[in-house]
Image (cartoon, rainbow, N blue to C red; front, top):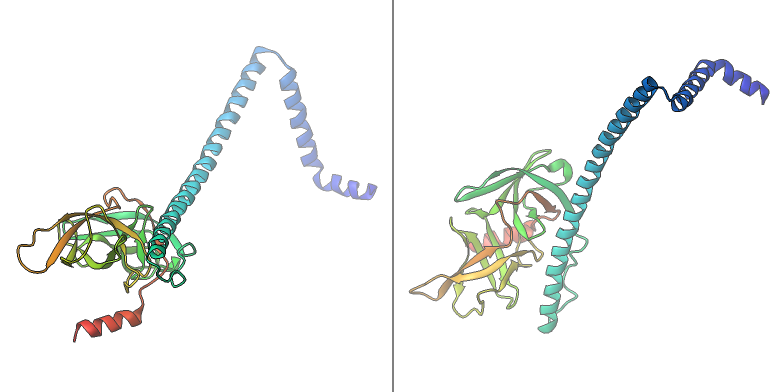
Length: 276
């Protein structure tokens, strides 16, 4: 044991002496009450406090940023879960098969932030800072805590472009949550509308509109908006219903990308059917 201490002393004696001298100096500084020493002590403690405060701010900011992301993730998951619970209630009332529904609580959510927007009259798009390296693929839905934002159009390694609901090239299959009646929704350059709605449909003003599980693009229920005004169709058997979206596209900053993509088989079947 003595030999061990001797070896340690030989290797680190300079450091040990330095530490002892520093400790002695600090002790003497705390005991000395002269004006000069007090001034040095005040400056030293003030500098230490400032440096400590800066490091605390850095760590606190990082912690708050992470906490905010977790809160946004929780809100998005709750939005999906609440939407699914509403579906459960409606299906239970109509005595439909509940076991066939997919559980959305375990859907993969990829966090992202909107880094740029192109919200034109007809071609609304956003660029997000998540790409193929994060598992993002074209066709994946983009959501936030309020509801559906859009659909991923293309990806690079670290970024992706998504068409928002305010894009004339994006059509989404939706349904009235209350009645279960399906429709196609698109952006007409001024507002979101449900097109070619039979006048026999029971959709009413104020009904919630959600994505339809029969959609080949978004096979889960995601809130979209509220049915508002009915278009004045003078002739024919169809109506057009305006939808007020839940998402504020101008203020949206943080989103999640649902890690699911449309069924290629269903898409091919639909294309073949409608092209006949």
